[in-house]
Length: 76
Image (cartoon, rainbow, N blue to C red):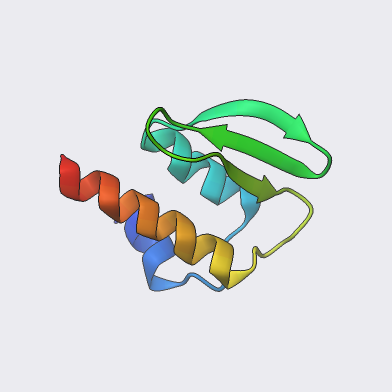
């Protein structure tokens, strides 16, 4: 099972590292850190901040990332 499916099955227990890895798999680039958030960006998509000190991540952050990834997967 790939990382996207694992996170989709259990969105309430996702670490910042897992979400960063998922975003990188789908072409997002780490654009640096602002405060306690790492900034990810992909051309054509808005900036996506990930709070690195929140473990596990809030579910609304994970669901928003999954929505964006689903959009990217549908385009491919």
